[in-house]
Image 1 (cartoon, rainbow, N blue to C red):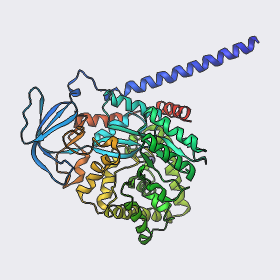
Image 2: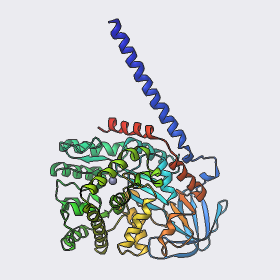
Image 3: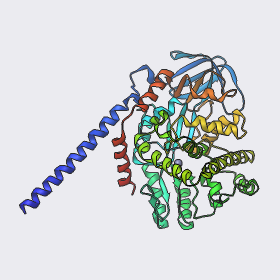
Image 4: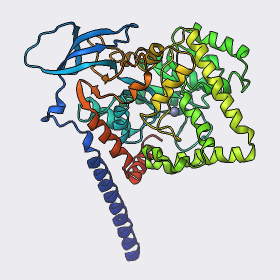
Length: 477
Ligand SMILES: [Zn+2]
C-alpha cells in the first residue's frame, strides 16, 4: 500500500508539473502577442476622427466621391460630406488618397493571434473563421471587449460531420437529436454560424437545418457528399464553399461547361445562396507541384509553426507523390483550376453573389497575403475591378445579418477602412499595401502594420498552438 501511495503521489506531481508548464507556456505566448493590445491610454486607441481631403469609394454603388470629409465617432461612420464641422476631434489629412471599406476574407482558419496582425497588415479588417475552437471564442471576446487590434472576428462552431471517421478533428454525429443539441450548444457558447461538412446524411443534415432555423443560426456549407448537391440550396444555408465541390460532386470530375450550366442555373434560382469559391487554396496544389522547395520558401514562415510542420508538409508530400506516380497529375490540377475560373465566371454572370474566401491558414495558403491572389483570380475570370472589390466588401457583408454593418462606407457603418495611395478601381494591386488601416475607427499606420508582419514571421509558438489544439480535442469531442 505504501508503494502504491508513493506511485500515486509521483503521478499527481508529474501531472501538476505538466499543467504548470502548459500554463506558463500559454502565458508566455499571450505576453508575446501583447503588441496587438489596445492600450486605452495611448493615442492609437483613439477611435474618433475627422478625415479630410479623401476620395471615398463607398462600394454601395460604382462611384467615387471626390474630395470628401468623413467623420468617425467612436468607431462608427457618422457623416460623409464636402465639409463637416465638429469640435474637439482629431483631424486626419487623407492627402487626396482613396478610402475603401476594409477587405473581408470569408473563409479562413485562424491558429493564433499573430495571424490577426497579418490580416490587418494586408487590409483584411474582417474574417469568417470556418473551423471553430474554444480559442476562437476567446479571440471573439477580446475583440468585443476592444482589448486587441484585430479584424472583426466571426467564427462557425466546430465542423459537423457524419458517422464516418475522417480525422480526429471532426465531430462524428450519429443521430439527429445529437445534431440538434450541437446547434443549440454552439449558439449558447457564442459561435456565430454552423458549419456543415463531409458525410452528413439526409436525416442528420435535415435535423441541423431544422434546428438552425429555430435557433436563428446561419449555416455555412462545405457540401456533404451523402446528400444531393441541391440540398445545399436550402434558405438556411447562406454560403456554399469551394468551387471544386461543384467539380467533385455534381460533375464527378467531368469538366464539361454544358453539364455545368444547369448546376449554375439551380444555384442562381435559389436567390439566397452566396458562393465562396476559394480558388487560391486549390491553385496552391498546383503551386506546390511546381515548386519542390516550397516548404523552405521564406513566405511560408508566415504560417503557424504547427500547421507548417504538419499540414503544409503533409499536403506537399501528398501532391509530390501524386506527381511522381503520375506526371499527368500536374496538368490535371491546372485544368481543374482553369475550370474553377469558368465556374466563378458563370456563377457571377448568373447573378450569384461571389464572396471572397481563400482558405488561408491551411496547407501553404498564407493568412492575409492570399486575399490579393484570390481577388486577382476573380479579375482573371472576367470581373471588372469594381465587381472584384465587391466580393470582399459588400457581397460578403450582405451574406449574414451579423455582418451587415461592414462592407461599405456609409453612415452608420463600422469604420473598418483602408487608405490607399492609388485608386484600386484602376489597379487592384494597390490594395496590397494600404498606408493606413482603420479598424473600428482606430488607425494603424504602415510602420505598425509592417511590424505585425515581422512579429508573425519570427514567431515560435509551436507548443502553445499544440496546447490550444489539444484543448479543442478535449472540449469539443
Ligand atoms: Zn477551409
